Length: 91
Image (tube, rainbow, N blue to C red; front, side, top):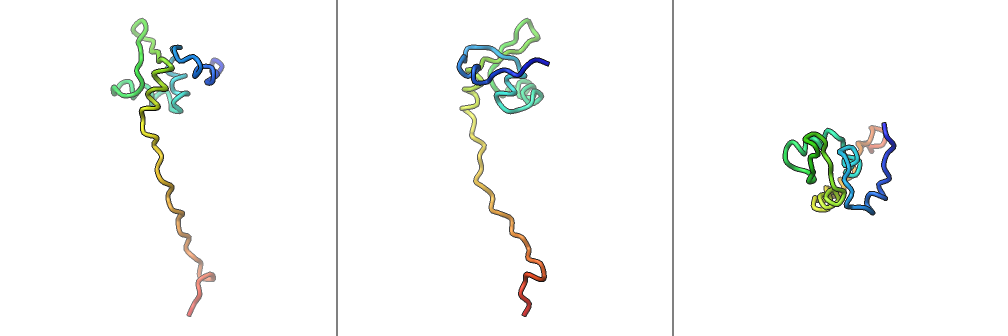
């Protein structure tokens, strides 16, 4: 297994093409999820090299991520904890 790439350098060179493993690292997802998105026709644009190898341009990955909704939801209220019989005041 190769050494993990320095993502800060990749962001500085957006014209570089990377494989699906690095694409998954940039997106914070698994390789299988990236493959599933590609099969379903969604996800970042890619190039197929020699009929088998798939490469993603870093600039395209970043543009794809910026085009997606943030996925943030408002914080959920804290769950109420039931008081025990001792903590409840009995009449």
